[in-house]
Length: 206
Image 1 (cartoon, one colour):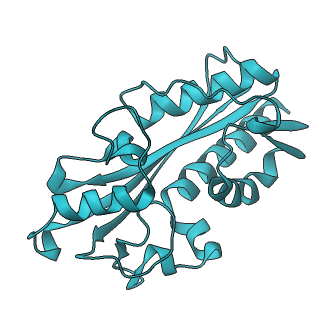
Image 2 (cartoon, helix red, strand yellow):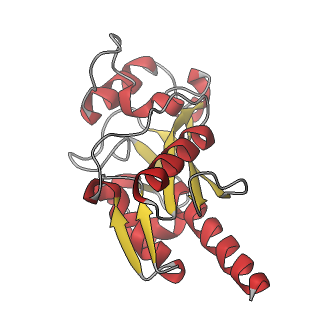
């Protein structure tokens, strides 16, 4: 592809996504370069919301578009916060809480629960559409397993990274370097799957 629009204005997502997407396009544009209104994320799954965002961005720009939707799922909370990860602490439905407020809400919900019962998973769906009505979008899914700590380990990190423990690397996600995170995160897994499928499709088409 000559150009593709990335359906986000989130700089943290951009840092993760664009290096991974280099094999499929020459030029990358953020949706905020073209428009400000965001797609309505009223789906019941990460995949539904990602697809809504990708189609919205493609319709607005006339370009192929790629979008993702992700969140944290905690077994002991029946999958919460899930698709509501970015607004978990919002009980009114009228405001967007800070990331710190969301993390505190999770820690409060798990209060008193031992570490071995704090299994959690980052999930991500990435969708690429060639045009707004693409009947066969390319879909990638990713999952990163870990546990939720008893308290925050660092004063930095995006989302829930400062309380998400990667047991394999014995580190909190916030302390994992970006180059490593771009190999193991749910978003990285899903994006790489989309890129691989795109390249395979391109080879078949000649």
